[in-house]
Structures are given as C-alpha cells and as structure tokens.
Length: 325
Ligand code: UTP
Image 1 (cartoon, rainbow, N blue to C red):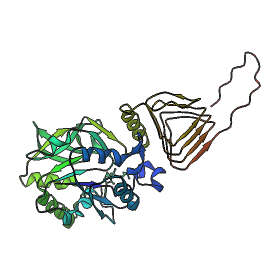
Image 2 (image 1 turned 120 degrees about the horizontal axis):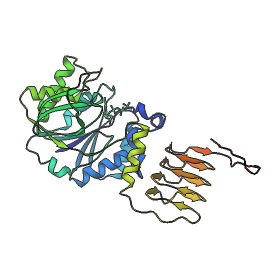
Image 3 (image 1 turned 90 degrees about the vertical axis):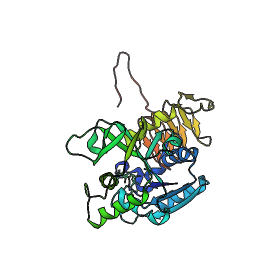
Image 4 (image 1 turned 90 degrees about the horizontal axis):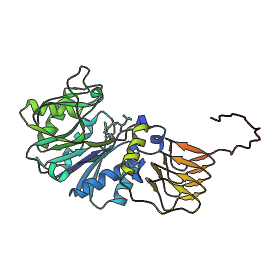
C-alpha cells in the first residue's frame, strides 16, 4: 500500500506567505504542515509515498527527503486541473489494484489510521460541517455511502469528505478518472476526485465512511492560526528565558533569541527569530524574522521578515485619558 499526497496547489488563500514558499511548508506549532502529516503517516506504518508536486515543488521535495526516511516518488503536475487530475499522474507508480491512501497535503488530523488501513472496503474520512457548499459531500445509509456530490449548490447533507481516502480498488479509480478527463467532465472547472469516486459507486464499488472528528484546516490565515492554537495544546513546555514572561502553550525554537518580551499564549516562534521588547500572542513568527518594539496578536509573520515599531515617549498631564491604536 502506498500513500498519495497531492501538494501541487498554489495556496492562493494564504498569500502573501505562499508567494515564496508552498502552503504545506508553512509552520504550525513548530513544524511545517506536511511535517505533522508525515509524522502521522509514518506512525501508522506507511513506508512509501507518492508526492504530487507542482508549485515550488523542489522546496517540498528537499524538506521531505531531508527529514523523512521512507521511500518517496515525486511526480509533477504541470497544470493544476484538479485533484483527480493530480491523482491520475500516480498511476504508473501504483501496482495493479494495490490499495492507496490519499491524503491532502494541507489536512492535519487525529485518526487511528492503522484501523482505517485495514478496512475491508474503500473508506472515506468524513465529518459534519456547517458550510457543505465548500466540500465534497457524502450521502450515507448507516455507514455506507450511497452518493457523493462535489461542492453541492443545493443542500444534500452536511457530511463532508475531509481529505482522507483509503481506496482499495485503485485500478477502478484510475479508470474513472480517465473517463472524467476523456469526456472532460469537470465540476467548478476542475477534474474532481469526488466525481471519480461517485462513478466508482455507480459501477457497484462499495464505500464506507470513518469519522474524522479532529481535523484541522490550514487553508486560510484564520484557520492556520486556529490550528496552531489547537496543536500547541499538546506541546511540551518550553524552558524559561531570563527576563521574559512566557504564557504557555507556546513553541519557541531553541535557536530563537528572546529578550525582554512577553510570549504567548498560542504562539510559535521559528528558528533564529529575534524578539526584543515585544509582546507576541496568538501568532506565528517565521524562521529568522526580527520583531522589535511591537505588540502582536493573531498575526502571521513569514520567514526572514523585519517588523519594528518605536516606543512612545509621553508627557501626559494628570487626569488625561488617551487611547493609542
Ligand atoms: P486546495 O483546493 O486547498 O488548493 O487543494 P490550494 O492550491 O492548496 O489552495 P488555494 O485554494 O489556492 O488557497 C487541496 C489539496 O490538493 C492539492 C493541493 O496542493 C492541496 O494539498 N491539489 C489540488 C493538487 O495537488 N493539484 C490540484 O490540481 C488541486
């Protein structure tokens, strides 16, 4: 069995951070998004992964090969025509009817994967969502899927497919994707994996669901910060820094220099960052960035950035009332 990890996307919703690095290398709770995913995959026994790269793919390839010791195959999706189109590129690297586990590169999850990977039928990770129009939706009877609809305009249910797919009949999946492409069947302009899976269902292939209650979206700045906050709750406490106040939970890279600062809660500070005379809470500060004389809340600062303010010099009379913004 192989894992398939599509990470060819541009990550437009996370610009400007994704202008210089791919979304999956953005840091949350002390490591890149894809690092959290790889740790889970490896813990569940995965030894081989096909990674579909495109935009800034060399950076992803370097990160994965430097940090993880499993067998990787990298394939390039030149044109970003949708998830099904991306998965199609993997066919030459999958044995006949070898099961595959597809996981989107921006989906951090808490699931007991070993059980999922022993399922007797193909199975999709689902959870209830408030905004079904953004997702592929599974209509179920008991634990069996009866229909799949990609980004429905009309309400059909709120059980969303959240980016974890264990597919036993991989040949049938690739055949259905080929059909989508040869007949140019697109939804919202893209070749959608949900549409290929629906075709498999119509051909009589059974699908079940498994619950993914802890699923953390990293697609937008707000959700990246929320995910950072949630993942930090499980982090170890960090050593005290002289002259600083630390409100856990935080991640502070050992090489970061922190001076006369208040850090946290819910804050990640990257390698070699320098924080001086500042308050930083609910934020992510990238590698090598410098933050001086500012108070930051719910902020994302990329790598090698420089953010500084000036301390106020005040001469304020008795009974004055002044609000600085
Ligand atoms: P998204 O729809 O979130 O796209 O893809 P994106 O490019 O990452 O982000 P936005 O929407 O522009 O902000 C979900 C996952 O599927 C991959 C993406 O890399 C991401 O991991 N994907 C999607 C591909 O690899 N190729 C595609 O053609 C589409």
